[in-house]
Image (cartoon, rainbow, N blue to C red; front, side, top):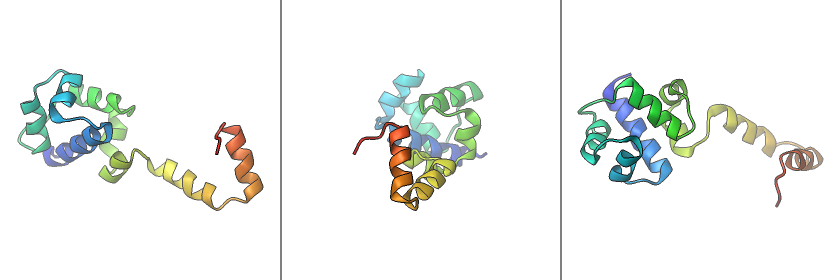
Length: 106
């Protein structure tokens, strides 16, 4: 994966978390300028830092690298999106049972 794509993913993750570059940098132990360099594709974080970035979002490194940016921005994986779509077309009684099982209150 090239540094520009990684940079876009880092932007998506940072924005998903609602953090400024300096706040994101503090979370992973780097300066704001370092985060800026990654986001603009000038430099790229090492593997250990990428693992840390992925972990902040509850992702594995593989998920971080494999998931499209849109999924990272929405915080929804393709599998989760499929579950949501299936839930929307279920019968009302089935939906109520699922909501009860998942402890979802209206």
